[in-house]
Amino acid sequence: MKPANVTPRGFLRLLLPAAVLAIAVGTWEIYVRAAAVPPYILPAPSLILWTMVADWPLLSASLLTTLKTTLLGLILAVVGGVALAVLLSLSRIVEYSLYPFAVVLQVTPVIAIAPLLLIYMPQDAAVLACAWLVAFFPILSNTMLGLHSVDRNLLELFELYGTSPLQTPWTRFRARLRALWILRRPAALPAFLTGLRIAGGLSLIGAVVAEMAAGSAGAGSGLAYRIIESQYRLNIPRLFAALVLLALTGVIVFLLLSAFAHFLLRRWHESALAREA
Amino acid sequence: MTEAVPPLVCLQGVTKVFASGVTALSDLDLDVRPGEFLSLLGPSGCGKSTALRIIAGLAHPTSGSVAWPGAAAQDHRGEIGFVFQEPTLMPWANVADNVWLPLRLRGVSRRDAAGSIADALALVGLEGFAATYPRELSGGMKMRVSIARALSLKPRLLLMDEPFAALDEITRFRLNDDLLRLQGELGCTVVFVTHSIYESAYLSNRIAIMSPRPGRIVAEIEGAARNERGTDFRTSARYAELCRRISRQLEAPIAGASS
Image (tube, one colour):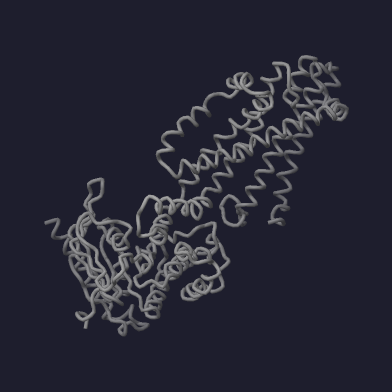
């Protein structure tokens, strides 16, 4: 796999966006200097970088807070989403009674729930709940899709060899559990990982939204709160610095989850195969 | 001699009506004799696969009965190997683990199954591929894995649902020969669903011809005996004559239906 990535094409795919970024940042810097734009309107990239270094103790603490919320929200979403998906796949009755509510929860814009959560929960818990809420649904729906996408013939093989001749509710339930473990679990893995990648980004968005809602109420210390606070104080360079850190966090979360997905699927799944020339 | 040995499976008056109202099989009578290679031949949609699924116990007849006269046990699923039209392998598991599946479902651990897995892979000529993943195999090799999986339980009855229909002719011919060799070595009974006249004539001891919907057996033709099939069987006059007889029988019910 490794040598395939160091082909001229792979190199170009890194070089081109890097060049675009360098040109854009360079143009920005030159424009700000040439037109003498005041930093409270548009700070130069160099100033943003300098602010990031100077304010690092403050910003890194905020970054850590947001990161913690994002990751914890994601982990809880994985636990909850997978558990519920498994439950729903085991029983039609449970699926029919609960799934609509999961959808309602998803289609309601979280920013509208955030103020409510802040009333009923302590600040940290409310922010976490927000991150969890938005990250939860893609995991649930993708995992459910995956659990249902087992080859029908494989399920028939399962029926042929796996079930006991005694058909009691208990043996049927046990057979379903085994099918879940042996067939549905690996079959669901690709779809689950897709959901996980989406959920990683959404969890960060949920954390930011909740922090903003909480921040306007006067408390909090995450990166989104820093952005609001910097805006009130017209400390625009710091606002930009916090924004850059948020963007980097999003990119890193996405890359890590993609690498994780690739690692798990590298042996067998089409999406993880290197294309032969 | 055939009268002395009871049939392995006996379908009597089997009718299958699907929930949609479609009658797939109507009053089907069929005996599967031990050790034979029986082909179910008919146009697509004539209920061949349904008949096979009913023998396997995967579907239940609306009326009629399926009996195993020679056996005391009620549950025959452990004696059956089933091969689908598609290889139906688990893409996330390597060849050995795919072959392990029926044994695993029967509660055999991977370590205890190692011998059976190796035997089954050797039977289909895939000794060196235990650790390979399905995506790295050709269509014919995937089908070999699928057959190895069906053989891993050493079934008395091998049910095959158009297993080679999706393969190219060269691969199909080779697998046909391998299948005959396997049956000779294992002595198992094979029920083989196909819509190919030539395949059924080449492989079978007996060919049951089915009419289109609703499916019924309209004729049975004795195929070639095992010792008749030499290397030149495909080009022999006996083979050509069999093909001719089969296709005439196949045309008969269609002509009858259209007149």
